[in-house]
Length: 424
Image (cartoon, rainbow, N blue to C red; front, side):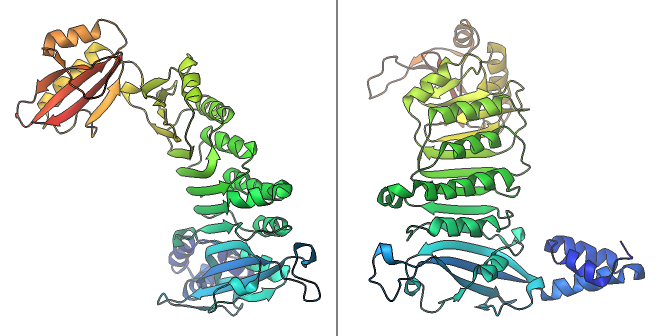
């Protein structure tokens, strides 16, 4: 690599993340043979700057025609690029020194008229070539920026233009926000295919965004293709955690089945993943409970765990979310000896936690006689007094800690048990 010409070295270095350039600078400074790498890296470190960019798809009214939807010209792009100075202040970028420019935040949106932009940042009307060159600049993930795509102010023909812009944007953002308000979908039912461009963008980012950690997506016509992409995420390792929040989008039974199936067929390695959407229906919980192969451990209505067959992770399901969590022994039915060992270890510690750093957990026994053995050893049995009417009245046993500062209570309600630490 020491024989490369400076121009080629400079082109390589200008596309490397800052931390990689810093490593090159340190290593190259020790060798005269790497002087081109040293000079190029130092040049980048001294002159590289960040940008906050906004690309707004405008639809201007034709001055020769009345301002009616049928008399609008084709979309135009209004571009605003603000340079972040070393002291943290911001100034308008002059579109020079492109090789040092990296994007921190990028906003792509739609609006009817340029006059709707803030007065102190009007931006510039530009051609697609200039806009595409700007939004395709490299992303600096370490800057903690985000990509925001907004469909507010949508009118016919804008989605295609937004889609074309998004196709050239790097997929190195860790945070992505994409919003198409439901009222717009309701107001433009004939443009469902145009709104689907936003679905395609989200699917593409889920499949090809290796650094994505936080995705918020709102779309009144979310297609099943988005759910399919989410299910695939649960079935493979990504290397980074991921949280997905879907707004105005409800869980589909087919989506739940697909997520569970892909995760179940994976290697089960624990990796933080979570999807949130509109509340699950009771039918979904009933379906999970009927799947003997998954052994759904119901914690309460519409809430419970599925332990992976490898016991490397578990799927935690609530009425509004599905997430991959670390496997815990109580995610499958446990035996008397295991619970007894948990209680013994609790008495030998300070009593603050019942297991690791857990102050309580729910569990099921794997045999009918386990509860009787526990009552015989740690009883007597106590009836729980509750104000609300219960079909099955809970009972419990209470175990004192040697310090007399805390208690351990084991509550039985039908076949479900709860063990928890209580203060005296």
